[in-house]
Length: 175
Length: 375
Image (cartoon, rainbow over all chains, first blue to last red):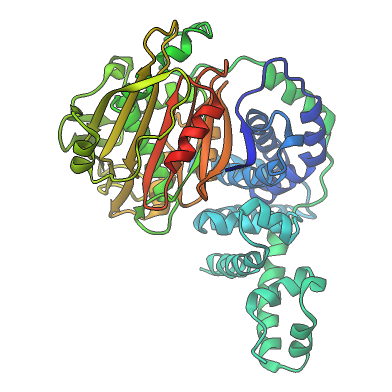
C-alpha cells in the first residue's frame, strides 16, 4: 500500500498565503492566457483566473507538496472558461463586450473581429468538451507534456486529440 | 516502412525535435505523408489564428490582492439555505456520531438526489449512455455546496431523517422517483447477507484494531433504483429523456467496542455494488451540460465534477476533512481523516465492481490496516 499523492481540502488551521502566492505568481499568466483563448476578452479571462485560483487554494493550500497542482489549474482554466461562455445571455453579454472593446483598423474590421470571436466561441461549445480543452491548452502555449499532464493522458495521445480537435474546429466553422 | 502516423505529423509541427529521425526521413521521400502533413499544418495554422491569445499586460500583484481578499471573505450562503451553519462540535463528540451519520446518509433524500446528480453528471461525461465507474476520486465540497444541492432539488431539511423505501419528488426540471427492492434489514449472519446480496468478498478482517469488539449487527440494503424523468421543457436536448441510476445491493457490518472500555470504539465495514447509470433519449454531453448548468449549481463544484474524468466515482470531501489518495491492492483508494484524527474512513472500488468502505473511531493507520486485509 503506498500513497501516490495527498489532497487537502480547505486551508489548514493557521495557513498562510506565502506558499500559494509563489504558485500563483508562477502560473497566473498561463491561466489568463488559457482563459483568453476561450473568452476572447481580457476582463473575462481575469475573472476566470480568480475563480480558478480560489478553487486551487481550496484544493492545494500548500501547492509545493502537490506536483499535480500546475496541471490542475491549467485544466481548470480551460473548463472554467468553457463553462463561462455557456448560455445565450452570458454569451450575448460577452459578444457586446467584445464588440465594444478594442481596436482594429476600421469599424468594419472591428465588427468582423467580434463576429469571428463569437463564431469561435460557438464552435468551441459545440465540440466535445475534451477536444475544446485540448485546443485551448495547446494554443495558449502549453507544451505537449504540459497538455498531457493537464488532461491526464499520455504525451503521445496529445497529438491524436489535437489533430482531431483542429479538424473538428474547422468543420464546425465551415458549416 | 509504414507511413508516418498523423499524430506524429501534428507534433512535428510544434515540437519537431521530439519526432524520431526515422519519421522525418520517411516524410522527406513520401508524397502521401507530405500531403497529409500539409492538411495537418493547414488545420493547425487555422486553429492557431483563431485561438492564440495576444500578449497581455497583466497586473499580477493587483489581482493577487483581490484574490487574497476573496479567500479571506466568509463563504457566501446560497439562496434558499436560511438555516445558519451549526457551530463546530467539540472534537470528542463529533467522531462518536460518524458511523450513525454514515449509515443514515445511505438513505437520506439529499444523498439520493445528490447521488443522481453527481453520478448522472459523471455518467454524462462518458461517450456512451452507460456509466459504470471503475475507481474512486475526491470531490471537495463545502456546506454551501450541500445547501445549494438542497435548494436546487427542492429537498429540504425535513428529509434529513430518511426517506421511505420508495417515492417520488418533483424537481424544477422533472420527476425523481426511487424505489428499493426491499427494506434495509438486519440479518442473523454474514452467510445470510452474502446469500441475499451476492457479495461474496471478504467483509470481516482477521485482525481488528485495539478497542474494537465483536460484531454488533449486520445490515442488508437491497438494490435501489433512482429514475429521473426530465420534463419535456427541460433544455439542452434532455427534455423527455430518462436517467436511471441503480446502486447496490449492499452489506454493512457494524462492530462495537470492547466491554469495559471508557470510550467505546466503533467500526463499520460496507460493501456495495457500484452505481450504474443508463440514459435514454439524451446524449452523455447533453446530460452533463444540463445537470451542471442548473441555476445554483456551484461553479467550482461543477468544475470539479467535470474534471473527474470519464470513469470515476466521486467521493465528496467536506471542508476540514483531509483526503489522501492511495492505492490499495492495486486500485485507487481515498482515505478520509477527521479534524481531530480520532475518526477516519477509507473507500475504494475493487476490480470486480464492488465499492468498499471502512470507517470508524480509530486512527488512519488502523483503518488502513483493516482495509488492507479486505482488499
